[in-house]
Each structure stands twice: as structure tokens, then as C-alpha cells.
Image (cartoon, rainbow, N blue to C red; front, side, top):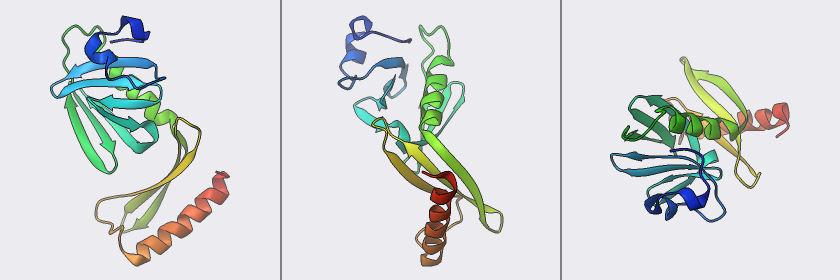
Length: 159
């Protein structure tokens, strides 16, 4: 696991690297290979753009990723790995770098909503509204409120 030129990657890793991507780190998990590329995260044959991953945490040996509202957990295989923190650190760095601006707003009864502007690999901005469990995000009142908050967010941050 390390920063690699494509010529120095094992075949099973190389076949998962998206075109024109640079591998920053990779590691085996109980469910397959995880690759950190400059443009995306690769979990076996699935590719996730960095702006779609809302959070990452590492409690050795378990790596937790929040992707599209679902939490995915991976047990990292330490065999042959010099630095157990390299892959989680690379993931956290890429997730954090995708965030252009973020704001936390109290909604009701101490429940919080997060609005963030995230930049994808092509430089495009995508806005994300995330809410604590207990908030019905399908409720018309919440949708109206959150759209007003998003409008204020865009004006305040200029994104």
C-alpha cells in the first residue's frame, strides 16, 4: 500500500484502477480490495466519486464510510501493511478536500442539519443537505425550510 505508478501495482489492483487515475493507497479488506485514487474511491469493482462520500472514520481495524446516506464498514487486513493509518488518512484527506464550504444548522429539538458544497474531480459544485436521524426529510415543511437555508448558504458562501 503506497503511492504507485501503474507499472508497480499488483495485477489484481491494476485491473480496478479507473482510466487516467493515480492510485494514492490501496489495501485488502475482508470483502476485497479498496483503492484510493485521486479521482475516486474504488471498492472492488464499484467506483465512488469523492464528493459523494460524506464522512469517513477509522477505529482499527474497521474503516467506516458514509456513502449516499448509508454507512459501509470494512475490516482492513493488516497483512503486509507497514502503516495501518495510510489508507484511512488518504481517504479522509480526499473526502475533506472535496468540501468547499459547510454549515451546521439547528433544526428543531436539538436536531441538526448540515449543508455543504462539494467539488467533484471535474471542479463542478454539488450541494448536499444532510439531516440527523429523527428529521423527516420528505416532509414538505422540512423541504421548504431546507431550500430556504440552501439559498442563504449559497449567498453567504458565494458558491
